[in-house]
Image (cartoon, rainbow, N blue to C red):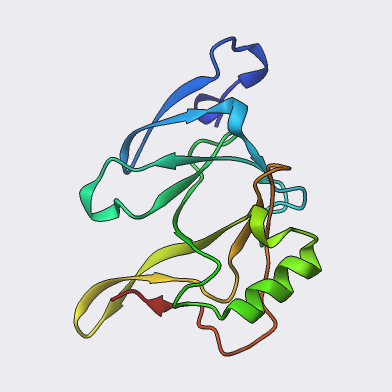
Length: 156
């Protein structure tokens, strides 16, 4: 575990290169996003950075990379406040509940793969997006109370 931990308090250079399943990923420790309550099911996982993925098929995705435990990363799909996955009114309500201004929010859908009759597909969790307050650099994974959103929404 210690080999996969960044000792960022001792570093002078804020840029760190991590090697994971997507190849070499560079993160800037000065742009950390803090999850005060951790991720759902992982309350101790609080420090992350967003990174680009240098793989063509994932060019529209971002990596939510763990900073303390560099083995921890999530493939995410950034979405706009007006999108095809979640209705604007539900995102607006969530922002109000979370105390994030709509103009300051960054929304990420956590992605994974699912085996279907037609092969492996990329799916996103439209029920529990990550809401990032871009000015405070704080985030929360929030479960939208509306049950119409799928936790395995297949991306076309």
